[in-house]
Length: 208
Image (cartoon, rainbow, N blue to C red):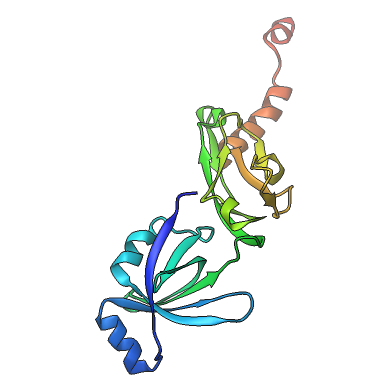
């Protein structure tokens, strides 16, 4: 996994005035906490975080450097101001390198499904999947190959190939991707079937 590093600085005050002062400096107030209940108030550069946020998903491990010390973290929450869309606060969750974590990893569909060329419609009811693994083994995304998917066929969670170091937690029979005919094509086929069964063949018509 490509390492994502973000610089941060410790802060000691959390009053409304102090937080607004931090924002005026181009920073975002944040907090880093862990599974043991410990937390640390910090601030990160807004432009730097926004630049990195394009690469950050729920499963991304960030190396958060606070006053020179490195911490492996997930971004657990972002508070956005509704009217302006401005980022107001970030929650980071620190993970232990040797402790298994549960996260949701985005799915990336690759390949061209032959069923689409036959008029089918590709549907992906699931865009992420829950896994457990050590922090260093968590991928940025999981690829799902749809190059053999035909009409009226589906790919399930149990069909996804991942490293043996990753355990899939989502129910194995859940549908990840499928290809179906468009509704109007299905209806047309259903109407044509009875007509084909009742219509006389050319040979029968001649005998009559």
